[in-house]
Length: 578
Image (cartoon, rainbow, N blue to C red; front, top):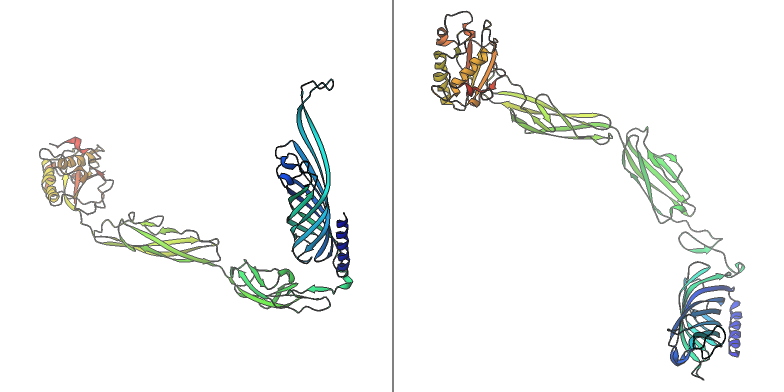
């Protein structure tokens, strides 16, 4: 105890010496404690209890005399419920004080320290055990019954800690202590090893410290201030004004009339909140005094505009930067169109492509196409529906105009291209003499068969892929309305039946038409058969079947309408006419 008093007096004397330089600083610490108590003979409980751990906490009261020296009071306790499997518990409390040596000044963020603390320790323990009663101890306990008993003990002794720690300043008044490790020496009565009452232990702690009090009195300090460039000067001096870098950009740099360009300043060398004024100009004319400005082109004429920003602050020299914004006028869609190929044969197709551009009208929609003749299917031009002069068997040409149309949000633009469609020359159909019939009769007589079996046969044998066209007519005085078709079908049977005297021209190469009394303006070709149908009258030539042979690649006469294939009309059921 005398040693503790002497040590405390020495610390106080050092503290008064340091007081002449600094204002006192007071702190309080709260932290968690972990203590590892030694084993074997050095243990509080003798050889029967191995090393054990205890948990708890402690508080410190800190009085800082000098940036390198503090006086610390340490008060704490730890507890263990079960000592390595023994039915025993213990609580150990300490109360110590001593000097702490700080390696860094109070203003440093990281503050490592070393300390030696002296004081006392108080321990209280209890032990439990089971026993069998030897005799009746009363109405509750029966002789031979198993009972549990506990024995308690307390002790006072000397304690000492020596170790290192680290405080990290979180703010002016709060520090965090992640680690404090110490040698922890205690002297407590050993129950078995009499005369050897020393214990060598280890203590770890971590927690938070809270600081109170001030620095030097204001009267003893020169008031200082920090300039924007980081220099610290007396408050009565003026900080030199600084330069900074300013640039300006517009997004987008090209806008349509009525749109807005966002202007973005880029500043380096200063924080934006340190700038106290800004002025905006468009083509040299002031437009705004606010910090941010967006260039709205509503009502402005197309053209190039220069936007300028001037800004600065109390501690900074004014700086200027400028950029340009191009205001565009609306231009409707314009473009070009191409046909590939640009010249095709009649019945073929051509692919149309086009390209359009606009300005300030928004996105352009996909183009659509129209043809002056023929048909369009998407971007494909089909010439198969073009009408040609059926009476012209030479080469024919038509120039078809294709119009491409594309729309934006405001209007439609067009572009054109042409496709040259060529119909090659075709072989002319051969007109044979008419097959004539007696009044109200559909029978093909011998003179008619001679035309079909001899003259027509000669043409077919020279060109077996040609087409035979038979057109049946009748006179107005004949009452059977189907007589013209019967005459044409009987004539077709003569050349397709393939039995007897009949020819075997495929029915698919025979076309039949029966316009009836409508002679369709086709001239009469009675030939040598006019007298074979009886007395010649005014209607003799009208009772006929027109016979045409169309060579391969040729074109059916324009006068022929509504022709049908002989196989469709089931001519085969007639057989070979007699």
